[in-house]
Image (cartoon, rainbow, N blue to C red; front, side, top):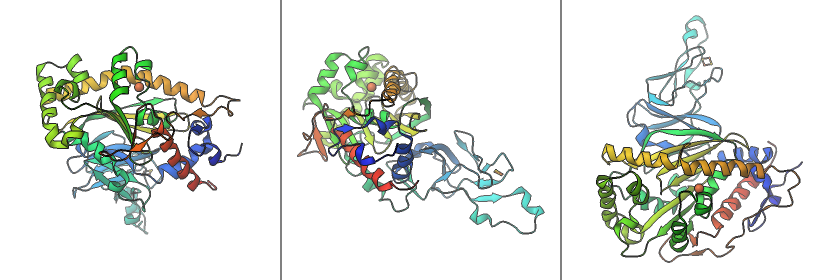
Length: 428
Ligand code: FES
Ligand SMILES: [Fe+2]
């Protein structure tokens, strides 16, 4: 069946065709028009502190090695030998002087330059090694230690791309005097779902909390989210949801981490640490942002941040119906080790492949994909119209702001998505 992108998302994005999540042609356009054109998250500088350190990453389906060069710079190269295509690095992370291909032993520096070809001593005409390095990701930039790469040489600077999302991200990052660090390797697992399903959920869907997660989220907590919750779109596709706690809220009710860690794992030591961070928050991020108690954030196209359980996640597509999900625990860089461990245990109890909330969400995403692939249902697009047109600028906060029930975060995402796919249309 031929595909016309303009038919998939209506003008105000209140009706969206099921084929957006299930069509092979849509997926091919996404690879070119979105993943070939966006800033994509690669990792955090805390993972590659020393020269020679490296971690694996993906940009959509393309395997990437992110490394700290001998010159201290950050490099991102496609993990594929220029001789016959094998991955030259198989370890998830580590430190090395060379990446050595297992097939014919060509070796590459940590910066990705081709260093040795064992067979070249036996031939007369030597290959020009300077032209045979790993394919470098043309743009790599960091913000607050978060490393991003883009295949689009002409893309706008990362700072500008993140735009006003920095205001909301800093509400978290700037609470900690030494910033944050990614703790350990990511959880990685495969879900039979389209990559946009986790993304949309974590861009702003806090409306399912007490229903899907009824075993763990009491209705009172959900009511508080409805009462104090704000949903923000800074740039279409980027969004933040949080509770804005009233002035003079007791520190225990506003402090990050307290509701989960404090009640389940933490003793006095952890609770006092979290209280101390909150006590300094006013000075560090200002009154308004010190009262933000974050829920979920999204950065276009496929990076999510769960402030409430402190994890960054990337939804790596593996076709229209499969996603490889990566999820890191994030902790304050200067927290004592025992507190870091408790924070990480808190994260993995709720999120990651065995986390109770993540299992429920993953099950939903897989079922949503099946629902998007049902025959004879093309005349029943999904309804995305809740709160249509009700989002507005706010006097004190950047972006468009509304109640959390307003699905505008998803409508803006799909409006951008549609525009980028239309720009990529043409012969594949
Ligand atoms: S495929 Fe890598 S050295 Fe031949
Ligand atoms: Fe959820």
